[in-house]
Amino acid sequence: MPDSVWVFAYGSLLWRPGFDFAERRPATLEGYRRAFCMTSMHYRGTPETPGLVLALDVEPGGRCAGLAYRVEAERAEAVVAYLRERELVSYAYDEMRLPVRLDDGREVEALAYVTNRDHPQYAGGLGLDEQAAVIARAVGPMGPNVEYLTNTIASLAALGIEDPDLAHLADLVRARQG
Image (tube, rainbow, N blue to C red; front, top):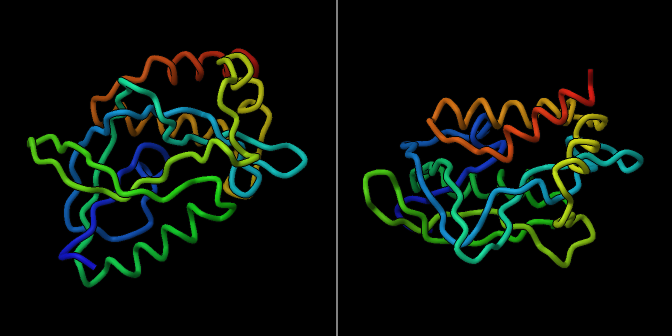
């Protein structure tokens, strides 16, 4: 393992990393977008009523703003093991090391979990109305799918990051829930 490991967060890792880190910086990943493009049967849904969770989806010219966490070398192996257990529960994500730009101008290689478009859980191409229908009704072992959406939006807002699609999606979900 290198001196330290960086981890890129764009969804639930923003508000629930689940590991200790030495540094946390706003960061940007080019060539990807944050998208509700993966069904969730383990955390925010069930096999009978799957939910939707965020994933990094490849998009030429895309840009995803989030956080990068730096993990000290002595904790890196344990943190990577934890992340693999958490994120690779069904192998719908591919673990990758990608260049991210930190807010101070540094570029670092960060561990990131990118959607596997060939996996049966990939749900790319759903419109916001279809996403809202799923998110409004799904509940899994980690709670309601809508909570995942609202926690992510709140975390992004606290960082000064606007995501108009997520905001519109939240409005659509609220309308469905009355």
